[in-house]
Length: 281
Image (tube, rainbow, N blue to C red; front, side, top):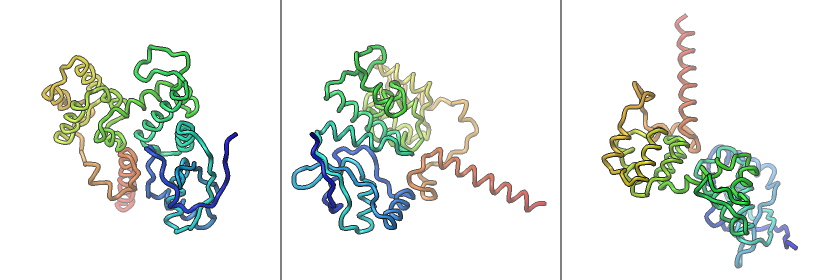
């Protein structure tokens, strides 16, 4: 029988979950949560498990931060005894349905849940789509999160990217499909690619990423070959105006992706064009 109870605990006594894959952002949504808790209090208890003389937070990291910002002495917490794997699965599931999750957040969340399910005795295969195990943990994860087994597998591949490249995926500078293929490059090849991207201000298309992947498998992806592929002129890059994302970020919320920034800029330009047209009448 699961032992659990609800208690009022100081937020500082709740330690973040180890290797928590989700980022707690101080953005507009956090401001709204702080205001809601200021007015109504914490309506839904946080979930934690005993750990030593304190508690490890399983679900409720955003509510914990909001409570700390407000200086609340305690918050309601459902304390439940659970194994490491049970805690991982609950932690992942409680956050997967959130909007605006970054690719890296979903990638590491899926990986953590998959590994926890495997340790519980469920079989799967992370690297091949042709070997069909008796029980597909990643298929179960996909059904529970509304995505296909293959999509789950592809997200998990992103965890093989070096951090700077993965950050570019989160920023919207590298699209999801090319990023999956780039994850098959060695870490040295990825590091070389990241350096080239910075110097040439260019990112690989899907077809380029696929060629890089194949050449990497053949041990032929030298720095010179990487440079030659990356600097090819792409049809959709002709006559483009480029503005580095970093120079625009101060004007937009920190959680905005590159695509969201682009949409907002287009809206502003369209509004300016319409206003200018009215002024000339």
